[in-house]
Length: 233
Length: 233
DNA sequence: TGTGACAAATAAGTCTGACTTATTGGTTCC
DNA sequence: GGAACCAATAAGTCAGACTTATTTGTCACA
View (tube, each protein chain N blue to C red):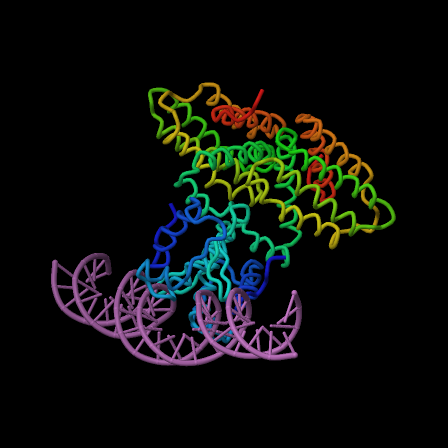
């Protein structure tokens, strides 16, 4: 997606980042810049740049005379797209997917409500187009085609909300949806109910019916939660 | 809050970060590492580390033969606490505060619902204590004391939800609440209705009444939205 | 006139080595 | 037993030389 491994320091991050977020180094572990530089066969300057980036993500803390210590998970910048990607690629992928799905369930209904107020004619058209694309790909194991339109649909909703914080969650939603299609049990065609709901959300937004847009989107996200067995009776 | 200006590269960031997020350099502007190093009177290595951090926040992009170009606002990592702080300190503080309040209004009700399910006895006790502290400071212009308990209350809710993504928004909520108290019109004592709502939320969570906890919290956040004249009739 | 290959200019990227400084942990002395 | 001191350590900083990718301009050729 985003340009990976740009430069030597990027390559180092591609290895160290996943290792740390996977919990390979328990909180409080101490790494030394020089040692890491040797291990990755790069100069200290390059390694220092990598450490600075990890530090800005609050994954590690660099202190004089001590070294580079790994921070506890609770302090990580878990909204950093890079961190999200690393964690999704690692062992606690399921846990991460659940967290993100809950986040979606909170954000998207509100985003849909705002979209019903703020969406431009162009965005309404895109929304309808996406919904139709989902319908067209909803039968006959066209999962990839369905996914593309599904992702686009939710991106438009988030963007049309007019809230920059919501808009930036587009990538996260894309990851979650892609994850569901590719790694979870999804051999069957998508749930027809969900498809219908998307069409109806597009309608509601077009008509400026904020209440309905929110309610329908909430139904979509509840479905997503149920798929992961979140939501106790 | 977090240790500021750690090292030379930190000092550079404290100047460059706010400048960029304030829109002082329009998107597409080109900076050169060497020139910046001269301007800040630091070595190229230090400046490179600073640029790497800005790059990891997606504020800038560094390309060979071109320089360090400023990215459009839509690509920034707006969830990065550092970026949030910079923007709150800058010119579009009001806009940022509105975005964050909308985010709160989406997250906190769901967090309260989850907290009603997952909160430990200890967390329930903390919650009650915070609510009582709010009551105790709700009259007689004790705004600072009120703020402390208000912040603590929402932190506990977010943490008790059991969702790590929600938990990490504690700092954001703290910023928003502090911003409201310190920079907005708030000479009067807090709205008694809001105080009561907090007490009731604590009750609902303690009793495990998820529906009620969510509904009451939604009322709190609606109040916050109304204060900023968000929410059209 | 347009288009292709080729060459020069440029700014980031990388490496090395020497030096500085803050912090820690031990040691000594009262 | 505690306070003051000192040495060890690893990050922090700097300067300079070199490499490499990318852009831009030029020139020849179709």
